[in-house]
Length: 337
Ligand code: SF4
Ligand code: SF4
Image (cartoon, rainbow, N blue to C red; front, side, top):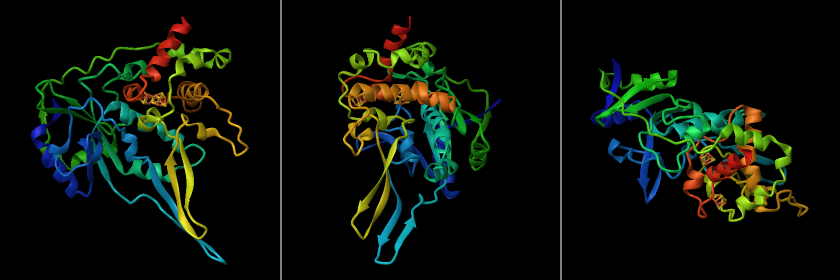
């Protein structure tokens, strides 16, 4: 027997979690944007989406946020540190690629400096993932050695029932068990069968790609120019990516007061590496695209033992010129043969 959550109980669950002080969030469509956001009622969730346009990263690492406010007086500089507001949250209906993306970035944000903005939100969030039963041509979790029902980064995994009436419940972490204690009486024991997970074809040979990237002779290959010629450097791929994590810190204000903000940045931008002298070590778009691929599949894994990609496919799905990680790694796979 397995624990089952029937869909007709979900609104009660939302009420229960809200009464317990949790903000309930999940996949929604708002103003034509498919994203994760807070809901009041279960009817606001859109579980029919294969994937939201915006990734779950937005909930842990917002596009912009204040770090401190400062005032400068004749004899003193005053600063007030800003941390995110305290908020216990349950994110219901994440996808496995998004949840695993957060776990991929944990070591990065805790490496030489512990990023309190990231870890406060990570520690205050319960991620409830729904295994995918549908995929589109851009999904590629299996190419990254993951699966539509991977558990990495999730606190609870739900498997949709074959009869579409609810989900099998698998509590994975203590935090997940605590959140589901609140709704224990709304769950039922049952033997309802789970629907098969989506069939996601493997699109490239990851090991062969990594070996090619690690070969120093390929750093200056003409391949980089050919593959990235049409990139317009818009950064959609990095901004929508659950694992891309680059940011810049800027002071916004005048001589006497202002706010220090943490803002997303992107290796796709020429300004990202521009030196004050005017020299830019990545002066071409092809050098910037090479950096993105090398970072995700060579440098990051050598430091953190995981690829900086969870296979969500957003970079290819949303690229205005139909580029993306998939195409690049498919071409590298061919070069490796
Ligand atoms: S690869 Fe596509 S999405 Fe990414 S920066 Fe280039 S044009 Fe934009
Ligand atoms: S690199 Fe592309 S496929 Fe990989 S996690 Fe980022 S957006 Fe998704």
